[in-house]
Image 1 (cartoon, rainbow, N blue to C red):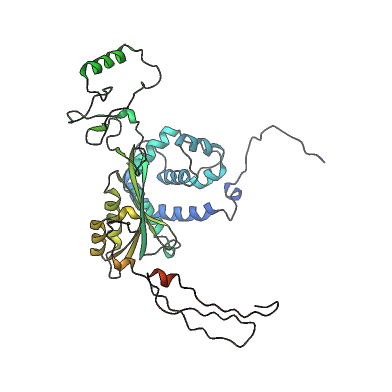
Image 2: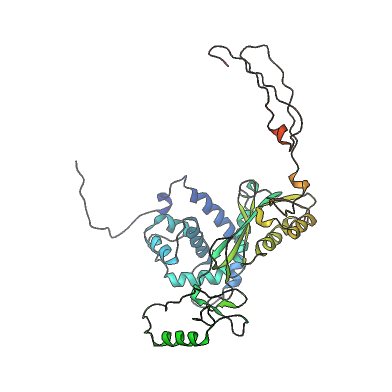
Amino acid sequence: MRGQDGQTGSMFSYVDLEERVPSGHPLRKIREFVNAALATLDAAFAELYCADGRPSIAPERLLRAALIQILFSIRSERQLMEQMQYNLLFRWFVGLGIDDPVWVPTVFTKNRDRLLNTDIARQFLAAILAHKDVAPLLSDEHFSVDGTLIKAWASMKSFQPKAGAEGSEPPGAGSSGSGEASAEAQACEAAAPADKGRNAEVDFHGQKRSNETHGSVTDPDARLYRKGEGKEAKLCYMGHALMENRSGLVVEASLSRADGHAERNAALSMIEPRADRAVRITLGADKGYDAEDFVNELRSMNVTPHVAAKSKGSAIDGRTTRPCRIRHKPAHPQTDRRAVRLEQDRGACSQDHAARSRTRRRPVYLQPRRL
């Protein structure tokens, strides 16, 4: 019998969000860790809010919503609030009921920024790492560090000359150096009608820009930086992450101004609290960390630098690049015709190319339909 396509809605709803989420969903385990960590931060939350006044958004819900935005790569707070209107999974994770109203995006953003500007984010991460089910997954001896560029919320048009900086050119000045041409260009710009609803067009060709002579008027902490040779320069910050090597989990993260020494300085500050122990630990990194002062500082902290060595001018010596020694057990040939006899050259692995390319004898005895 064909069912009816009814369009009328019911007046009352008896939807249980706990039953809507599958029992094996990954967010169930994550929510368990998050709730346990938030319970330990109750005293810290109480210090941030006054006893009277209008109730704000619960800090526990703010952090759960921010975590949902990160896990599902939702690009804006407005889109997050839109999806929380109809996504029952998001409502269940954050702690909203089926009839609870969703927050205004601007209200959510201001409350979240006020909360995360304190040390709560760092305490939240530490509480999750200290959970009884998470701590056994972490290594306390072997770590890796890396950095990335985080684009600033500032336009290149806001990168303007600093007041009184030597060598800075005023906006609209060309590379010819002619005062008459510059005055004529400024007069043309003043006479041109301004575009309504958008910023004026700016031609950066021929202008020299650097962090010493220019700065962003909307984000003064953002700096002009590029990832490598041949890459475009952009206003950005630099993010740093310290990972443990057992499960590849991030154990600490930080943000700094973008410059050539930010990655190494952040790595030293993050690994230093974990190096205060009798046992030597290791730190892996790419070639960007291959600097003499960084390597020497790690060794002074009882940290072995597993840094990728540069082809020229590397600070990594033979203590890290020496070849390993691999010992093989002597082969014992078996009389059974079904056995396989492998003979391998014993001894230490060498850097000699001839030794590495030497062919090893592996005689194999075969029987029809058997190995």
